[in-house]
Image (tube, rainbow, N blue to C red; front, side, top):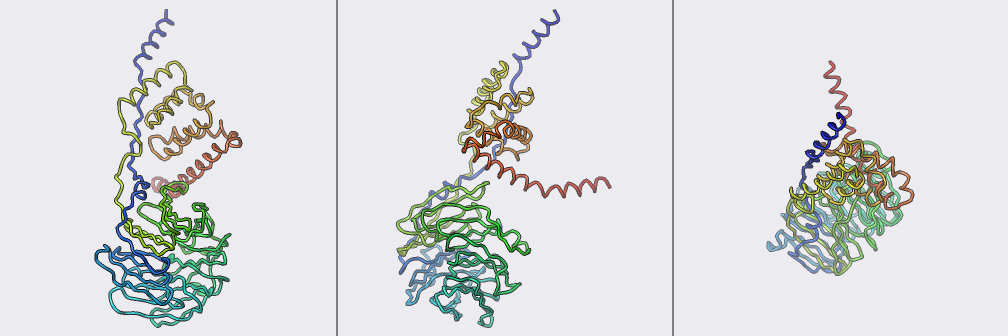
Length: 484
């Protein structure tokens, strides 16, 4: 009689039991692919010769560009006219603004020309024996230039004097990039990128990176302390955090190598607002690469009519400039994409309740494996999280996770990795990851697809751990304070 009573009570509890709905807050995100795929042409001009450079001023009021025999400084908007628009008898290779947008440095033949945006002020620096390819402002009183004569030269803006000649490169030095007021990067056809620190010695680089192909362009991203190096058809990301922090760094580690184009990459730019790297190549393509994830990913591609030789994005990420080998200069504008929920479909309470009801029946029938498959098939985060937590409460999580094909396991792996740093789900996600690694670890050697996903998960988890590691010291200090 007592057994029948307990059985009746259990059946009654099962009928009234409902699967708990674990609600995961939907954070807002911006689909940057929409932004880059919907640019609008607002201005175009034909320059003499191929476009050799394009740059926006830091104040976003000017667009500067050079052609093989052309120099252009355009006001923004373009309807305001040009500050100058002149054909040159000499070859022009580059143009850069000073931080205050009041001075411009240009590379004209074998000379470096300093020019004012507002007045007729002009100054020339001579010393290179072949075409000057690039020049940058280092600080308020120093300028650096690179040339086909295989040298990097440093100039004093106050006295117009040449401070030093660096001859470490053995071939054309095509590009320079300022890291800060003391450090500058150079890249050349000797297949190397060198790091110069004016506080140490001007003639000897403090670090050097050997690359498999000639270097066309170097870009520094201060928000991430990485250098982006275009060498051949590859784009390489190099870690400069130690150098930026003031430490000596004889070896610059490479963090990632991106194969994005089928021909030489000639142009680089970066949008800090959208954390997007922009690359241009001789394959007539401009590619937009998101750097916000654990790995870089192409989110948009723009096809041009000719080889791309210059790209630039304004500091407010509202304008894009593209130059080609045929001399065509385009200025494009885009509007901000709307902020929307990450999920592709709006959350519908009725749909979630229906899914949870179906899974509840499977759990009552002890069909744990099938319940998890139904949850994964729904692709709804609330449903997956609720199912996993209930399986863990029933001590049946290991049963449900076992016996799936690699596609289902990868789907579960992606969910756990994506929400491992979410406070509401980090415990269940950690348990799921531990089970996946212990049950399916050997399968990584048999499935290239699964192995690739495990590598991504490893990188993502490493980033999460790296983000939390600095808090250990703070917790230790807090423990000491509370103990005292």
